Structures are given as C-alpha cells and as structure tokens.
Length: 532
Image 1: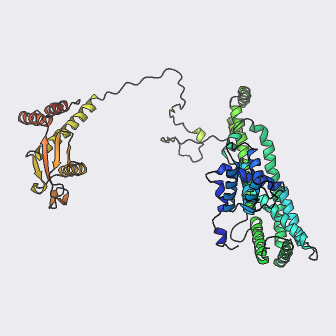
Image 2: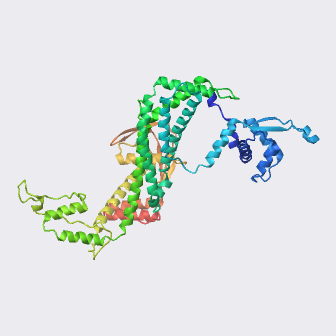
Image 3: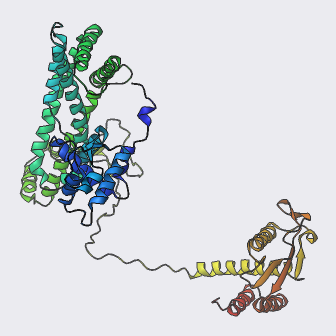
C-alpha cells in the first residue's frame, strides 16, 4: 500500500478534543453521536442545547454559546450544516437564519474511538480457540469453492476469514500482555490465586491444544491454495464489493485487490512465515506455555511458603527409625541419596595428607582432614569468648610524628618562598616537584578568585599582581620544564604564621626536632582558633 501526501495531512477534526472549551465541544459531539446511533441525523441547535443541558454538566451554558460552538465545530470539519426551511412562527424566527447540523464521517469514527477508550481498563483480550477452526474452515471453503457461485458468497468468506484472523492476533496479544502486568504479578502471589489458577491453567492449555490441532490444517490449506485460485477468489470479492450501491465515490478495483493481497500476505506470514522470518504461530505457542510455567512456579512457591510453617517431626522421626534399622553403611548412603538427593558441594582448601599410594583406595578409608567451620547463623548459643581491644597507641604515635614532620617541611618551604614578600617566576631557579605543584595550585586559586587573591590554610594571603601579563617564562623543575606566563606573586603573612616562623627559628637553633615542630604547629593552630 502506497503512502500519499493526503494520508499525512493534518487532522483539524481532532482539535475539539483538546480545545480550550473541551467540555462543551465533547458534550455536543457525544450528543450528536448518541442521536446518530438512534438513526437521528439532522439536529437543530435547540435540540442540541436541550440534550446537553439534560446531562447537567454545563450549569451556565446558554443557547447562544451552543450556536457559536456548533459553528466552530462546523469550521473544524466535525459537522455539516444546511438551512432549516421550516415555517417560522414569529418575526424573530423569520429574520434569524436557522440551521440544521449533521455529524461527518470523520467525527463518527473519532467518537466511536473515544467511546471505546472510555471502556478500556487494562489490556483485555481473550484466547478464543474456536477462531483457529474458523480460519481453517474458511480456507478449506476457498479451496473447494464453486467458481460459478455468487460473488457475495466470496465476500462473506473473505470478511469472516480476515475478521477471525484479526481477532485472534489482537486478542491473544492483549491477553498474554495482561499476564505480564504488575496487577497479574500481585495476583499470582496472593493466596486467593490458588482457587483461580486451575481455571486459568485449563484456559491456557485448551488454547495451546487448539493451536496445535489446527495449525497443521491451516498451513496445509494455505499451501494448497494456488496463486491462480487466490486471484480468482479476490476477483469475486472485489466484484461483490464494487456492486454495493454507494453514495460516495466507489473505491478503485486495483486498490481493493492490492489491499486483499496484503491481507493475505499477513495471514500467510503469521501462520507459515515468509522465508525471511519464522511464523508468529510458534511464538504464540511459546508465550502461552511460558505463561503456564509462570503460573505453576507461583503456585509452587506459595505451597512451599505454606509448608514452611508445618512441623515435619513425625516424618523425620520415621526417617530416623528407618536409618537406625540399617546394618550396612552403603545402604545408609543409598537411603540418604533417595531421601535428600545430592548435597551442594563445598570446596575446602587444605593439605591432602595421603597415608597410602594405592590408586584404588576409597576416600572413605583415608584419614579425614579436620577443618573448623564457623556457624553462619545469627543466633548465638552459649557464651562466646570475648576478644581484647587491640592497642594501637604506638602506631598512632608514629603516624602522628610523620604527619607533623611533613607539615613542618611544608611550612618551612612556604617560608622560603615568601621570605621576601614578592616572587616572580622568572627569578626562580630549579625548583622541586612539590614546589612546582604548590606554585601552580596558588596560581590556579588566584586566577579563579574574583580579586585574584586567596588565603592559605597556614594564614598567608597570596595575590597575583599581573594576572593579564603577556610576558612568558620557563619554570624549570626537577621533573621537567613548563612554559607559562611570568606571574608576580605577592605574599602577606598573618600573625599566626609569623608566630610559627619565630617558633621555627628557635627550633632550628635548639635542634629539638619533632617535639619542637609539634609545639610550633600547635601554636599556629591555636592562633587560627582550631584544635591542634
């Protein structure tokens, strides 16, 4: 079927569904549709107004508003109008132009669709097993059809055949989709599902059996209908369709034949396949069987939950007496295998201490390897031995000394950089990798700040004097060279940092090491108002 520009046009007939006064338009259109089903076609504005007001959904609605809405619906193409030639009883009626309105075909289909959508509460659908027999019987009638018969008989066969195929495909897809919804999942875990599951399972099983029984008949009839027979059948169907008296323009015969050929191709592809993809019939059967399996699994899980609270003491006592009566170990092994099945294996790592090199030595004759297994149960029986809290003071002391040492080194390096209060990158010689990273970090913070300055955690204000400089320099570091703008950094030390510098000088003179560094760092932290 070819796609035309006319088929892709805009649909102004749908504007009333989402218009500003949608309630008024929908009420008028629904009244027209109900009267259309009662075989009343041409309606006056007074009749429409009275019918809409009878529903009591528009309390402030007036006849003038109704007349304006009817004109708007006519403009959108939903209604057709004609002059009402009835006799006027008053001068006002004579002077006023009276109209009658008719529902157009597009609007009839739109209202029919909306009425159907209002009834949709889920996927719906059904599994009608009789449709397989209907399709097989109609295909058999096409094979054995008397070509001297009336064309209307061919039209009736084609209409029944394609209607049965459409209902089978759409209803089965909708019904199986409804079994995958969240509502179906909730129903399958409820206790009430045990009562319903037999009916549902039988319903699905009967559909699968009908599918398996009729599938071969349908495939065989499709294979035995030759192309010549099919074309003769389509000619008679098209002839009967064109013989219908129509007020509108009759469809083109070639268009009718092409639509029927496309419908036949859909039918054949669904049941037989088209050579490029398998048929839909096995997929439908597999989906139905999967639905049955889901139902069975849900029922088994519910039954297992119910049995989990039932005491099996008597059964276990009977089994224990049975084991006690056995005289041979091999018989006990076989009984355990029948009663419990194979236990899941567990891989335990350990050294295999073999006491013999015999290849035919049984595992039951070898010495066991003892391994202690901890219980996975959260329930604790008996008193558990308490474990002492580990002493980590020595580790904490070492780590603290290391942190203090690194902080002291960083502070000394910062003091070296800001000693003169100003720093130009081109005046630096070779610097370490840590110094390069610190300088780049300071420059990044300054360029990102609004005032091109920031304060370090140590209490030093760092600012860039020439943020937009065009001069460039090469910063030489131990791990490489970096070409960058020749920035000038200005440093302003806070009181806390000057206190540390004085403490660091005394430390260097006394040589007390880490303890002095710790004291100096504590002085800096106290000056910043934090805990050391």
